[in-house]
Length: 375
Ligand SMILES: [Zn+2]
Image (tube, rainbow, N blue to C red; front, side):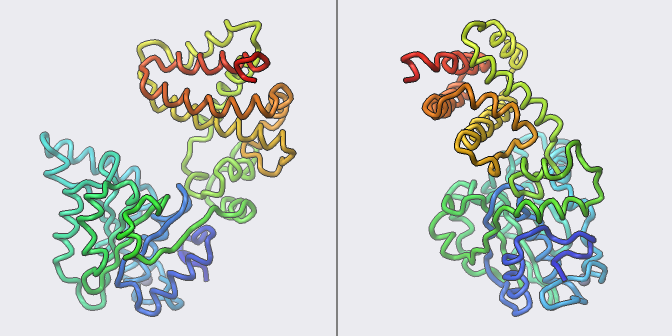
């Protein structure tokens, strides 16, 4: 029986990691820190919550699993499937309650179950008041027959001071307590944190497996089918179901137009019009630029795949015809230069309020592909 089958669809992919956790749960080996490592949207938080559920299940159907309907499992807050929504609600509530120094006065913590709590980044990362609150709460004893689960998303982003503050707790959690730090890049954790936690790694879910899982979800199939979305999500089920793919495609249209305009040296006007539309003067647009830059990178990467004859690796599969057309106009040397220049463009645009300008300058340089500047 797959972990989490009570929802009808089960946990998506990463059978080895799931098996490793189930064996730990069944053998009583979870009174420790377990680091879940893996890319964005691959299911680290979901798996951590399901582990917390299994640790408290009163009628596990299989060793290390959970039933989904015993008195303990029934206490899981249905809102757990929308954690961003839960976080937004908690922050809005805090905003009403505490006007000053809110982060210190009311550290952000979510309870998805009486015995499962999540300390998500408050702003960009976990704060010291959150770490203090966590240590404080763990002083309380966990009753016999119950297990406390603490989930720390994005722990690799936490400042070292904050990681350090939790070192002792990570090394030796109180009885019947499991700490689950989550990390995209475990190498960014303090080495002392890494050495104290048992690492369970999750990887991208293979395309066929992800498509099969998506087809079992109670969701409307997207335009072009789930295969296209599975490709775009790069093996991340969370991303596949939560990303606004319509908005992604809209922005990607602009990115493709920008590339095409950049490759059309005779007519810079269309380029200026495009950047002015994307970034009207006086608007901040930082997030939009970050998304656009990410899309530009993925398109350039795809063009590299087209050039190298590796069609199977193309991420933006649904616009492979446009990619092939662009590839025919960019030499491999020109292309690698365009990618390097995109790094500079992204950095410049981060600093510069006039984001359209940085983009424009980059596209203009693209148009000089055949000239000495790119040689
Ligand atoms: Zn149960």
